[in-house]
Amino acid sequence: MTGAREADRSGARHRLAACLAQVPTAPEIDPDFQRQLAEILHDEVPELAGRLAEIDRDVHRNGYHLGPACGIESMPPSVQVRLAVAMAAAIASPARIGGSNLVAWDVTPGPDLAGHQPGNVSTTDGEAVLHTDSAFSDRPEDLFGLWCLRPAERGGASVQVDARDLVHRLLRTPQGAAAVTLLRAHDVPVDTGEPEVRWVRTITDDVVRLRPDLTMRGFARTAHGRDDELVQAFNHFSRALREAAGAPIFVPAGHVLVVDNHRLVHGRTTFSDPRRHLLRIRMTGRPVLEWQS
Image (cartoon, rainbow, N blue to C red):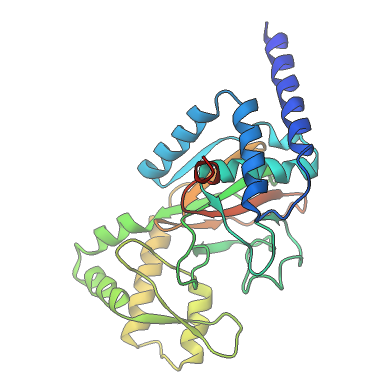
């Protein structure tokens, strides 16, 4: 019976891959392309509605969801991207990468994205400090997803902290309350490598933005000394986040990690396996499929 079930699952994955591959090539950012992929996923994966409900419930409850991704690890590379885009379009609206027509990018050690994103941590194999995605954007994306095609043999696990909950806890202590009050009232400088620093509000009512590495460089460029109140407040908040970090989350092959980018800060443990490969898509707003309904 187990062999028969596995054969059924394998056959379903092959049908899904074949259907996704048949969609005419178009820019990943094209909503019609995303809708076609999401509709195929809806038609070929009967349990999709239940999985989407589970993702929504977990993200609202815990700030993240970790679960299976429709056999993505066993599909051809070109179909893997389409499947990730399809899932993302069923969850929310996939966001454009910079000025490109892409929404999905490879998370692998290497220089491929060095020119796309300042201070990009996706292309390194070292530890990634706790941060949020699009931290210096006017409106960071609501969510991001990581589809694991091949994990590192050792390391490369995700680290998460509920920053919104930490803010509430810091408000109960005099030093924490002072730090939160300053960071809510004043922008901090972020050095993105451009001629001018960007000024970003770390804490607002609904969003936390954090890039400590680029912010400390920004403080240095704007002559904020170590004893500056704003620097001390930022360091206190960053240190509290590091101390609150729990056990790393390992994302197995064929699974997706969906994270609330407004609520959680995330990082990554170091690894040394050059074969580690994930796909990353940022998402915002309502599902593409729902927009088209």
